[in-house]
Image 1 (cartoon, helix red, strand yellow):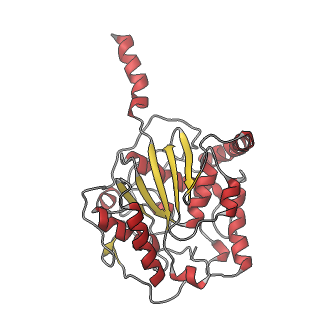
Image 2 (tube, helix red, strand yellow):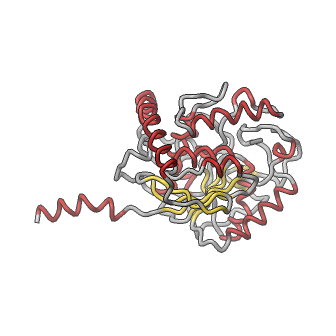
Image 3 (tube, rainbow, N blue to C red):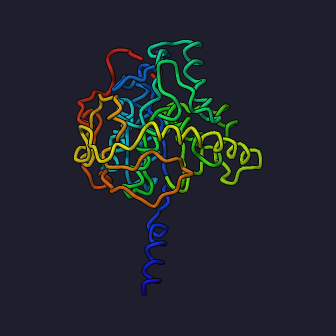
Length: 333
């Protein structure tokens, strides 16, 4: 009897684990996109008229996909892009500050080739394993991956199996290529993600992620020897960086930020917070772990999914009264 009980305890986490098909969607065209400048401020600009149309089109595309949860960043453009789909499916999006755009640092508000290259090079280094490289005046790859992985753990803990996450171009590209076991670097280089582009991954936070499609292009889940070698080298380079990051950033325990669990259950959160506290999701989560560091612990689910009140465009989303378009051109990813 004791042996049987120990066996059940040992295998129960494996039974409880569920694979997730996570659909990442880049936001529709913002006023800053149209102006050709970088804006990673929170809450940031709204959408253009073209962006409004793109949001409607992607809602129609995703509406029949069987999605069971919707998530957005704390940036206005993702919330406006998600609004038509939320209305169509009758869901209230959960707000996850940690999937916001990569901080542009000194390139914030800038346009042109120099700003574009300066902003893009550090994330490219992160993809290759050099996650200690910072964007000038901004964040480095270790902190970026930690905050996104933290929110992915929240999505997984909600119990949703086909969530849609409205996020940002650089965030989606960097996290996917840094994390999946079958990154297609050539495809990513030749096929950057435009507005409302879709990236689909499957897996779990503990067992890792597999890239299924990149903006409609299927990706082989079984990569060739060169890709496998790249992933092995990447993981070897990342392991000590992750260990050092975890040492210097210990778990914060059960601290709840403002607009925490209760707010996220209602699909409400701060759309203007861009602090270290904002990267902590609305549930108590374990400290950041590399996808290679397996654990059977699961935080409790908190995010409202199907059956919640719809968050219609032009209404109040994440505690912020929003308009369809931002009247002034500011700056965007």
